[in-house]
Image: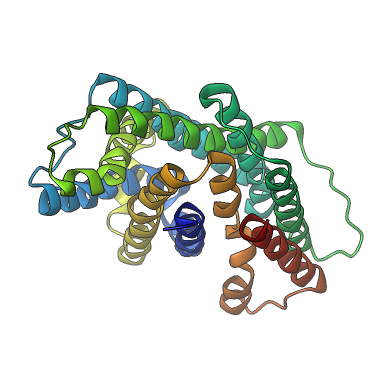
Length: 312
């Protein structure tokens, strides 16, 4: 199917929009780091169940050492490093500014894809990426504060965390694509089609294992593991943690791995980065906020950039 990778990337953006809305509630109730550990554990259960039902095995049986290495590395870079930096940037200057730096992920993915995989993008793809990122930046800046005068004076510590978050997500996506390439090569030609079709979910399973171990170590070093146990008693918090898990590490991430199989990493990452724009309307409705003119302009600019991927 033509443009399948791009379509899947758009679905990822929608899935991550739902994830962001649910995570906003869950993180405020049970804490950001406990939420990350819980969602990794829940995603492993969901992924194992899906793999068991479809392939007959609850874990990847045909992934070789190279696939495990690259996918686990992508889990460490994307989940542990990227999300750790992202949530710490939230602590310094809030999620709205934190999301601004996540727009670094697409160009980082494009550059990393070029360095590691030799992927090239034509001039109109770079133009589309620039227009899309410009629209996203306008939208986020419009939501960053109510003052008409925009003065962006952010602490260096928060800026470094924000850059780390964008670099982690973009690089992690490319590492996932490399891992899936090794995974595909390791699958025998006579393997059941179910194994092939579930490869992105199997890849996400490996990434989630790395993420679970990483967040467990971080919480252990910070001596915050008791907070995880306390979080399980918050019924509403756990409900939204479950929704965050389903639309995030389970569905969203698996679709993202599927998307990069059919589209270049830079393009796929750019389309996935539409979440800050897609979230404007539901966020305004939930929080009873008005949508500014700048947000509308940002949305139109972003949609123009997305259209360029399909029309040129």
